[in-house]
Image (tube, rainbow, N blue to C red):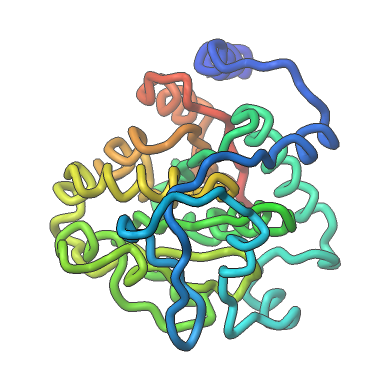
Amino acid sequence: MDDNKLYNALLKSQGERRRQSQGEAKAEDNFRTERPFAGSDRVRPNWVRVDMEQSEYPPTVYDSSISLELIGNPRPWSRDQLREKKIIYPGMPDKAVMDAYRELRIQLRNRAGDRNFAVMFSSLGHKGNSVLTAFNLAASFAMDSHTSALLVDCDPYNQDLSKLVSVQMEAGVTDYVADKSLSIGDILYPSGVSRLSVIPAGTQVSSAVELFSSVRMRELLSELKSRYPDRCIVLNAPPFQETTEARILERFADQIVFGVPFGDVTAEVIAESVDALGSNKFSGVVFQE
């Protein structure tokens, strides 16, 4: 497949969502808006974790400064640790990598407008292992002092998220969906990066397809999006071409980004994946070395 055919396929998928560019500075300034916020936040021992099941509390006016202060980070990674784990951070020596994530963040915000959103990241390669890129994408949103980010790992076949997070994690998405006694606060963890929280994939690997298709999964993502107007959500999905889960998770995302491992994916595979997606949610590709 030639480059023109690939280019046309990308344009076709993006046609209905194309917006006029607002410029990087304006996109950053206009992203945060104040909106109604139901409930109030509860602090748990050891580190701050927000429990979202608080219907007994009266509605309050959303205050982003309070919301951001309640995001605990009891074991922050040092710069040396961040560099070792290949996690991006302000002032990192490799400015080109930082600028690439900033550009991706700005483009996604431009498409979303003035609301929060969920973006799904899925690799088109055979090996998957997209969690580091998804983590760094979430970290790039968390660098904005006026917003926060949440990485929801929905790849139960890969446990590499535990290597990127500074606290021990237990229950995750699949456990929450399978066990109604768990609250969202039971699966929400600090990451080691300021203003970035994570939810691991969980331990229910064999039934992941059925769990992701359930009503409780839909309610979980809906609650995560509506509870925090200033929070950007990144869903890390299994490989799009290799698994069924990514096709199911697509329905929960506002935007979709594909990861393209260097030398592992052809232009034809990219175009086929965009066509298979069959929606205007596709936002672009990230080429991974």
